[in-house]
Image (cartoon, rainbow, N blue to C red; front, side, top):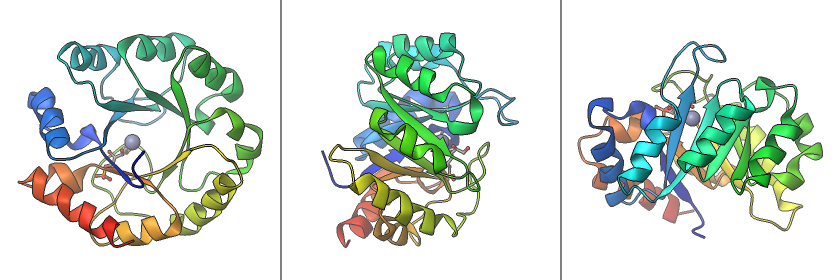
Length: 222
Ligand code: DX5
Ligand code: ZN
């Protein structure tokens, strides 16, 4: 497994050419695809569902896809994403009263599980669920939109969570999501993150190969 993973968030892609956009960033060196699902209730925006993921898989997008569920994680929605080919499903800890049951549902059906914390959400529950999870997503913007500014106070949260992860001898991705750019990615990596969700900084650039290699160069200096 690579030390640092770059996960373009397709929320900022050109939805008219979604398949080609995903293929282009993968050809440009992206390690996985971040699939932002918004239901219009947990966050005000509405994006896409399992049918879009299924279409990507049907058209030979075989890369790792992490589904970021900014939604009410009903058992049906979770199962539909698993059947459609999600590699990871990440739930917001405050989006359900039954986090342990939902994480077990994801794991019991052969999918990797992640939990997401909004910028001001405490990481207190980590101790009681960390054994079951494969990914921790720390939001560095308030969920619902791409193109927002990175919230710097998250850096100390990354240091804290990285220390907790280090105590376990299994690979748990520490994924940071929101406002990542060429100026701040090194600080985020130095704080302990290993997986970087990048939306507008990649999809707003006119050359995906250049921008991803610029991010890679920054990370290779760590
Ligand atoms: C926001 C999403 C993020 C967002 C990141 O709710 O979860 O994944 O698309 O986009 P940028 O990198 O533009 O902040
Ligand atoms: Zn996201």
